[in-house]
Structures are given as C-alpha cells and as structure tokens.
Amino acid sequence: MSAPVPITSQAARVRSGSRPKLREITLDDFSAIASFTERFGFDPLRSRAEWEHLWVTNPANIANGMRCPIGWILEAEGRMIGHIASVPTQYRLGDRQLLAASGRAWAVLEEYRGYGSLMLHTYLNQPGIDFAVTNTANAVSWHVHSELGAKAVPAGRFDISPAWITRYTDVMADFVARKKNVRPPRMLFYPLAGALAAKDSWNRLQVNLRARRLSLRHGRRTLLGCDGDPRAAVAGLCHLRARLLPDRRQLH
Image 1 (cartoon, rainbow, N blue to C red):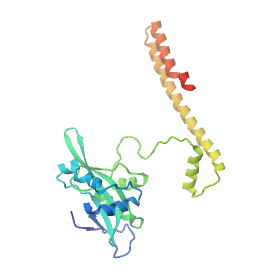
Image 2: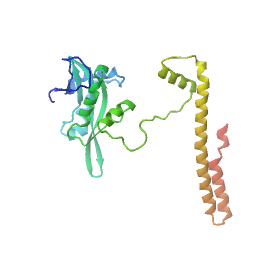
Image 3: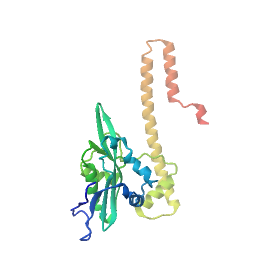
Image 4: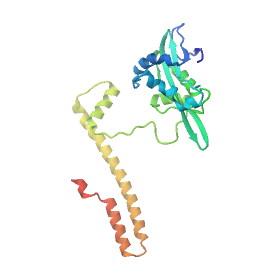
C-alpha cells in the first residue's frame, strides 16, 4: 500500500493544520468503514469476511496479481472523513479481456465536501484499469462525475426513475413537504391530486390512441395483402379485432 498522500486544495474550507490526507484502504479498516458508511445510509456491511470477499477472492483481482486497490480513505485529525471503495471487475469486448473498477460507497463529511471530487478523481484515474464504472450515480453526484470527464452510457435515461402512483394525495403531500418543509391539512391535497390523476389519465389515453393507430395500420396491411381471398380477409379482421378490443372476461 502507498503512503498517505497530502491533498493540497482550496476546495474545502477547513482550519489550518487539519488538512486531510488520502490513503489506500487496508483490510484492517473494516470496522471504521462499516461504521462510517452506515451513517450515510449505505447498506450495512454484514461481516468482515463478506466484505473481504469482494477483493481477496475476486477473480478480477486474482488475475491482476492482487494489485487492485480496495479504495481510498480521507482522514483528518485522526478520524475518517471520507471513503470510496473500488471493486475490480472483468469485462470482455470481442477478443479483449478488460479490467474495470466499480465504485462503491462514496461519502464525505459535509464540512469536507469540497474534497469529495479529489477522492473521485483518484478513483477514476487509478492506474492499471481500462475504465471505471459508477452504476449508482444520482442527480447530485453525476455532476461531479461529468466535471471530471466521466461519460454516461448511451442507453436510456439514468436521471429519471419511473413510478406507478397508487395514492395521488400521498404523492402530493410528500412533494409539498419536501419543497416547503411544511405539512398542510390533507384536504388541501385533493384538488392537486385530482389534477395529477387527470394528467396521468390523459397521458395514458394518448399512448393508447397511438397504439391503436399502429394496430389499424398493421390490420390494413394485413387486409391489402390477402390478394382477394375472402378467408384471408376475415382472418385479418378477426386478428385486428382481437388486438383492439379487450377480452370481456378481463372486464369483470
């Protein structure tokens, strides 16, 4: 393991003499890491053996001669103030075997939050890997990733989480509470919940209409392709009817 590396940055406003130092994680850091990361809401580490398993018996680490770092700890005044883990993983692209690092439990105390980007920079630019992956970035951490040159995977929208609303009043109450930090009487949310439900109903109607238009086009192509055969035309109409009309048994 490398010796502690002083961090010289003006990003964090800390007292003179308390400048944090960054060092690599060792297996003996388990207890401190378990306590620190749990404070930030990460899943609790069940046991040291399970935690060590991510590196000690990791095939990607073994194939790399056990040289992959466990991660990095940020320390100041004898205590842990930041943490980021790096789990080695293997990928294959064609005939190439690639070594990647997967980030885990990136967290920094609020008063040292300015040093978080330096920890992430160390993780993203660690030597010996082909690329680094962060699959749990949220709307906040993504901005730091992008500033350091990270690119989003060009597939889907990772900044949007789909949701199925079942109780519109609860959704509106939670939204107002988070925005205004207040809890108005529940009766005030019924008009807002009704408007949100109406908007969802309108969106579903538009989706269904588009699907029906596509089905009509498909049915028309089926009928035009029957070459005058009445049996084929009837079969096409039955197929179209089955696609457009719901099964009555499902309506009861």
